[in-house]
Length: 126
Ligand SMILES: [Zn+2]
Image 1 (cartoon, rainbow, N blue to C red):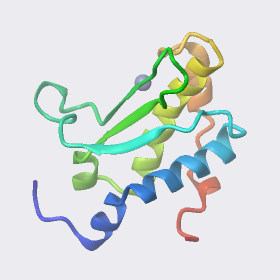
Image 2: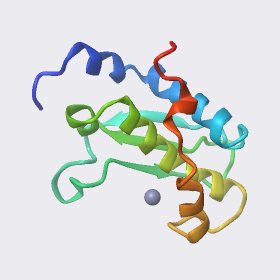
Image 3: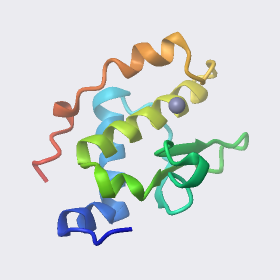
Image 4: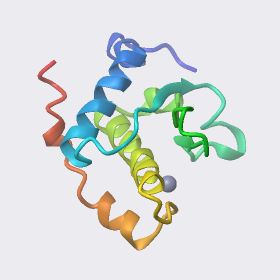
């Protein structure tokens, strides 16, 4: 991985990811997405999965939080808007799952995806 800039270093902080998660949840999901673990991963976005920037895991037992993994390769070529969009994508799956709906790339999934509006997140206002 090439040297990372200060901006990328700041984005690496997982607190930033939780901040994005909270903002997306309140602005796009009426806070209906269950609190999830959001973390960077070295293990996705490489090799045969190089085109995949994220994935998620959910657990039958609701005492275990869903997990969203984001490829660190997002940092190399993308910005906070793209990171937010990727988190939103994974959150849409978890939101559908949590409401006991089919949670793949269904028509309802794509309807929701179309509502993404990065401006609502006000990411530059702290
Ligand atoms: Zn997906």
